[in-house]
Length: 210
Ligand SMILES: [Zn+2]
Image (cartoon, rainbow, N blue to C red; front, side, top):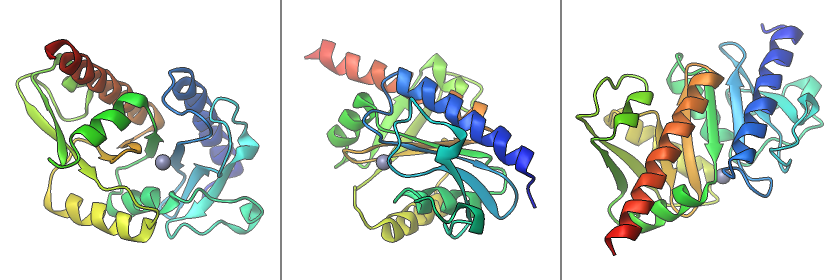
């Protein structure tokens, strides 16, 4: 069972990462949600509807891996997308943090490549910022799932995809945003930064080629 100190430390990390991601314009208008693992059965996660640039520890709550708030956080409202977080923690014991953002570039690319079902990222040096990749000479496909308000269906669809495919720690939802994860908040944040850099390169390249 996690301690109060562990909760506070993780909650503070989520507040700090929120300030960073909001500051970059990747979590506008109270969108996005962030989480960190506390123990085998619990995660700390942002509660619904808060500006991600102004989070305090009181805006973070604890849910179990079924997405149910613990008794001392039952007054807080979990994000509608909590299931998309808990599914990842259930599947992979190595995951320590999940970050979900709503940037312009992720949104635009996810719509542009929705029919294709993935965004291809190839030969970029910054792919090496993603855990497990050690050379730019690689081609990675970031899957895109159709957007829906049915989180049970979407989390099942993502889980099925992850069962069959090796994915570079992330996926897009069409017209919506990016989910990425890592073994810590710091690693998940690095993955967001890397993905956003690569998305910006893709969008700029498309603009210049016109
Ligand atoms: Zn979202």
